[in-house]
Length: 70
Image (cartoon, rainbow, N blue to C red; front, top):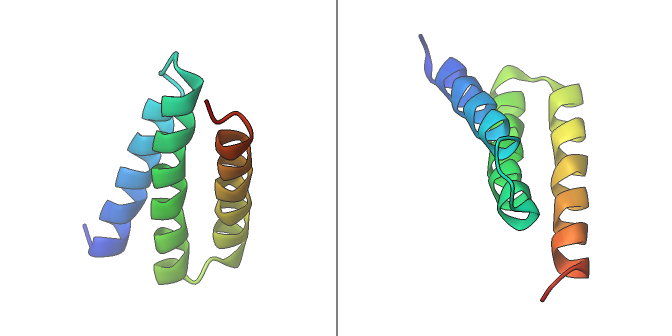
């Protein structure tokens, strides 16, 4: 297993874990970290669709975190 695969597995674990959370704020924060890891995975794999999709998801999560700031 190489470094890129490890990043992919970590990203998958974080995104999966985020969907198990009941608190939407925690879900979005963990999901941001998972998406950031997928962006790194996409960079190392030269997979532009992975980079774009996860970059947009990060922006959506940030938008809702800032919009619903308590």
